[in-house]
Length: 193
Image 1 (cartoon, rainbow, N blue to C red):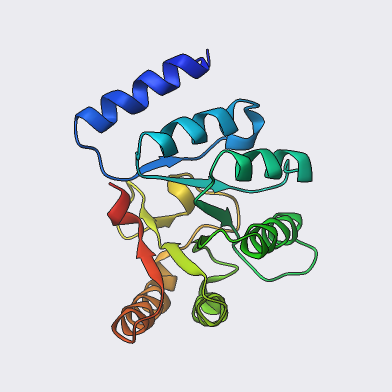
Image 2 (cartoon, rainbow, N blue to C red):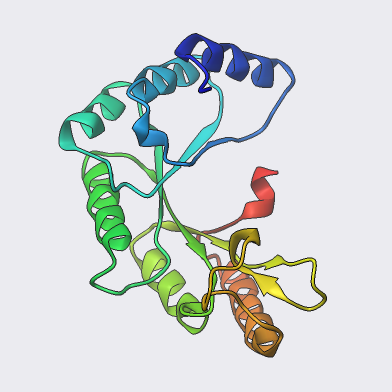
């Protein structure tokens, strides 16, 4: 069963008291919780560092305003491609811009690298950086099979990276490293663990 609002508040206080760094709130989908604004207000008031990662598909203007009223400091969306028919990308952009227009400063796009977007990652990072938006690249997960990359730890038919993609993964990883050296706004998922 899901934790209650009070149980979440206690959990965040325990994490704070143990000196946890960034507390990442993500899915499932965090916006399914009607009490998320109350939780955000609590952790903001308690000065507990947090990040929210949402696909934004359930967001409404009323819910977004409740988050802003609660003191929302950051918003992260999952956008894995630029394809115009991708509802996640469209919803993600809509709400990222909504929060940006209302003064939320810490905006992040989370990109999971997979077969269909691997070669577009540098263009995506350049685009986000030009808008002042941070990028997080969840580059790859190694599967238990030697030299095999899996998408988010579980292969999705046709999207998982394969050994033949290794050279491109290395090339893209080097490009991301170069971007970091140039001062691009890029987080590493390792910063959250």
